[in-house]
Image 1 (spheres, rainbow, N blue to C red):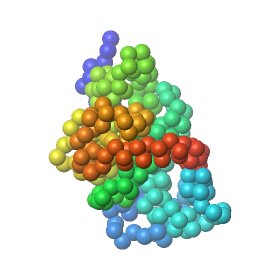
Image 2 (cartoon, rainbow, N blue to C red; image 1 turned 60 degrees about the vertical axis):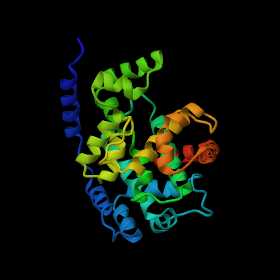
Image 3 (cartoon, one colour; image 1 turned 120 degrees about the vertical axis):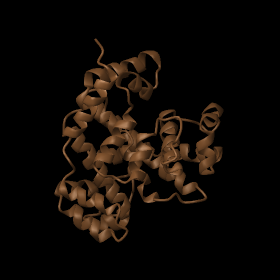
Length: 289
């Protein structure tokens, strides 16, 4: 007998409440998202209190994703080269994902697939921003939004693996989109679940709202329209491996493209850049795992 959707929603909220809060170091790092006085030295000092996190940041800085000449051996140097917004995004993302999964193996999908997709979406978002004629508000949050946009999948995988496995099998067998099958079975999709977790952990609205709605057909008025459009566009671009000549895809995303002020040339340029960056993106994944 299928579980009632409302009962299932209550169980999802209950499981989210059971997930531990972020470690103290990361709570301070999260507070720095809202503190405009934060600088690279502050971020380096916070991260240095966590040796494992420090090691991963150094591995990312030395990975082929960045290709810096010479070995980077100090956290301060890594922060200076990567930029403190990027380092903060990496530290928060790695800790959020590890906190939700509690170090357990993924059951329904590959951890590498999740990370590589998330890193690719984050990279696409940044690449599009770099080609836009205007800078979005709070653009320093762009990369972390991309990295965290699918964390709701981890909740489904860790706490509702039997149902989630059926959802994935149904998508494979019938060509359904994952978020649609999630809505049908769970009553909510992985974006909404991710948004609930990040809101509970007091992430800024500019981060959790785009994540919560990235599979919704319409962007609500309270959302930052540019950031939400960036995430929807980048996620779809990566999932569908779109070419610049794909008229159906461009028609489907005409609203986002117009809002961001970009056209087929930008999509072509970004798509080609990402295709050429797959080895770098996999090197990024290796560094954070």
